[in-house]
Length: 88
Image 1 (cartoon, helix red, strand yellow):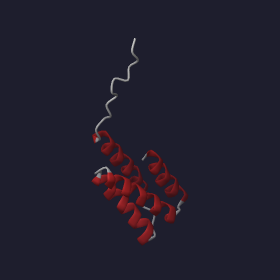
Image 2 (cartoon, one colour):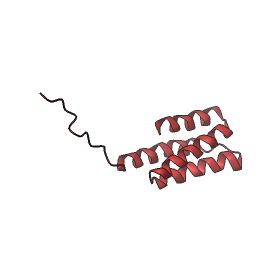
Image 3 (tube, one colour):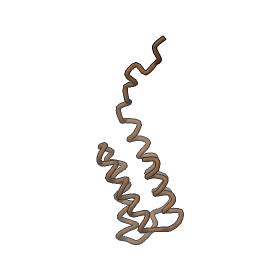
Image 4 (cartoon, helix red, strand yellow):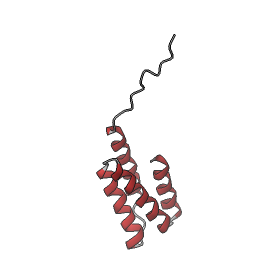
């Protein structure tokens, strides 16, 4: 998802509404796949503004989605290393 967030930020900075809408849609789908509803809702709002209203969301909205994704990632189960320490 960092790549998806970078794409959203780049599209927003460039003022490319179509690209922004597509990137937000992709992030929305990824977020829903992991149960990150707040991040998905934020991505959906960005997608709607870009695709259907034809406006760039405020920069604060773009910054906020990064925080929502980070919050969702923090709640994900951490992988078990399975004893990855090298045997002596």
